[in-house]
Image (tube, rainbow, N blue to C red):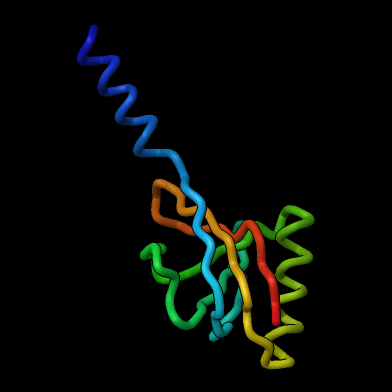
Length: 102
């Protein structure tokens, strides 16, 4: 029983996402894919070794839609990302939770 409790605790800890804040990024590429996901590549790459070096937005949410629109406008105007917060999931995908443009 004790071994099962320890195993359950390890599994819970390994699937927990954690938050990261980074500053001064260049928006290199932006796009979207099936499954209500938009993605972006930034330079320098995310510090947390996100899967494929990509930051994702869930475009089925209001936050995702408005952030994607903001990023498209910023790309057209060659604006920089002054701050980006994201969470890294257990599968190594990173999802944006805050985006701020310069």
